[in-house]
Length: 50
Image 1 (spheres, rainbow, N blue to C red):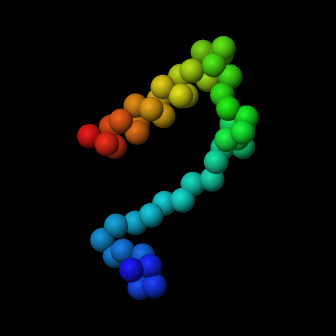
Image 2: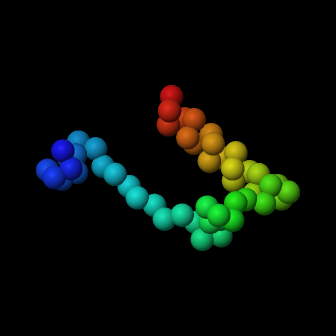
């Protein structure tokens, strides 16, 4: 399937990991803004799954 290329009816978007929050660095949950970022991201994921 991959040798035929990407699907024509769907697209794939690849985003880079945010530099200020590397996957090894994590989030600073003591700051309200950082907690809000995490909650916003989780809500977006939840909405996509519905």
